[in-house]
Image (cartoon, rainbow, N blue to C red; front, side, top):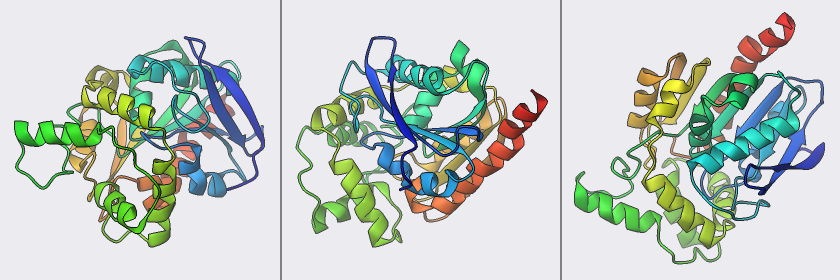
Length: 292
């Protein structure tokens, strides 16, 4: 990962401190990246490496992840935290690209319609995410869809058992659940280190939030140009979610389906995700700056 330009603390609406890292030139166009469930700022390492030379890349740890302490959970808290980050790193009226993976995409949806979102969001990239019915439509278990599969999936995702150390077996399980069948071993290991570092209380608490997720109204409020990216081999948020988002978003510019890629799209297909970030920045963030 590139050398950190600076770190700072954003303070959320309930007083929770949010760990934030900023990479790249202060004068460059801004990109704000929100990671997913059980991950951390480390998840965006490939994007930071490729973008920080000519972008101001902002990453932060969601509450209960990485270096942000655990606090009350819920979609409103996710939106509060993103608002706090935007206020801490962007000047009044400054526009940025907002990109979210999985729960990070849900964060963006939860914040859509808020004043800070309208003030700062020039465009959005949604990766491997959905707005509702996450457990019902999960393909984690090779069973027929129905109440039994939903109940067992809910139990698996919310299990209180510790993940323990990263082992050959745990990497195989993580790869099956979250990555495509052809994922490179080093990328599987990278994701395993990140996921296993997530504290158990946070993992369990956020699993319960995601199981009850309903952000369909937030999708309709997300009125800026948006690209949706999904892996066709995603078991956690199958491609049906991406297709639904693309159909319901007010301004969806493109649906990108990555063949054979699983849930961890920014790590599994970093070139494709980074290219879409660059594309949106060039079209909408730079355009806003030139107009100003």
